[in-house]
Image 1 (cartoon, rainbow, N blue to C red):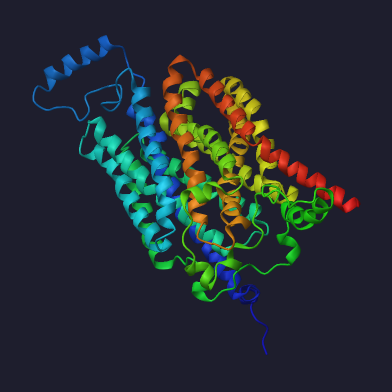
Image 2 (tube, rainbow, N blue to C red):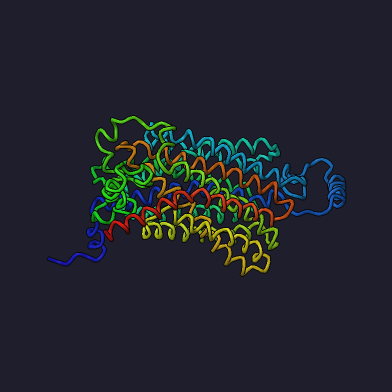
Length: 519
């Protein structure tokens, strides 16, 4: 019998379950990357919507000259300071209003999205959201082709897009949580969450390609991509491994699924009952689930239980603290997302295309930061402590960024990578591994229909910060970019303070576990 070719041996070395998991991992990665791809163009196009222009006297002279040589034909866009109505002196506030419209709608819609998503098939819900998102993203760009200069047209496009994009995150996190258990969840989801940065990078490159020649295509093309991925979602997304008769959890040794919190929970009641004569504190049972998400999501556990209520999700230990922490962490991240290209344009005096290309380095750093946060949290078995450590380093790094970025392009490149890693690391960990952990918490008693709601609460609260950050940046930046960075440093400090109680719990759990082993 002839030996099998190397490629076939490679394919057959993986089980059917592993191939399905790899497929779902890749598919959900691409689906949510397309969402972020469609959010990025607005930050790139800002430099084209408002340009640094000549004095008003020169503009008036130009208009008089244009009127003499073209008394009948109206110029496509008469303003020399950008695209009306963003060519006024208050352009930063107007551009900030676009960001705020999208993010405020996103924050409000996210709280509802999780509750709705728990009650509808994920495939249909996500497909509808992606098709609608593609429509509204392209709608913004059509303003260029139809010569629309009404501010409310662009604001309404942003509001509508913000609402429909809330279908994405709860859906993909629930799906990935169904397919992957808790073992090495931090690393797996750290790698998976790089879709955020990959989408931002692709969105920046696509938008920057057309921004100086035809900025309408900077929105239309991403809109088409999102819609196409919506069709792919409808055709291929599998919500749960049980739907294709796959096993509930990835095959692994039982040891790999016991993190520090779980061991503390299993062993500590014996020690506590001897010393205190009372059961262990519910919060000392900690932030992470006692059992695998998939193992309870079968039969009656999956279909027979009712979806969790909003207040019920809030009562899960750790949900409130991590939600508020994400509010400030996302404030910082989204301020960079929406204002970094304009900042680079002003400081480095680059055109919109080059500034957009350079801003992608922040997202490159974010990819490594998310993976590093997941790897460290798995190794230390402490989610809150990992976030706190990165937040502690992020604040001084932001101060260094504001100072060093004025020294030249090379220094800016280095600080973009470092800042991206430290800013996006905690954000990535909370929105993925922590959300999945809390959504399968022991207190849910096997109810697997809470993951989407918990994810929506955490990300919805974070989105309030995402809405406030760009708005505050628009209001503060006229007084100087340094003040914007001070605001970001204060936000990082607040995020760290909100995690202190959970960090203390983790350290106490670790100390008690060490003491138990010694006895």
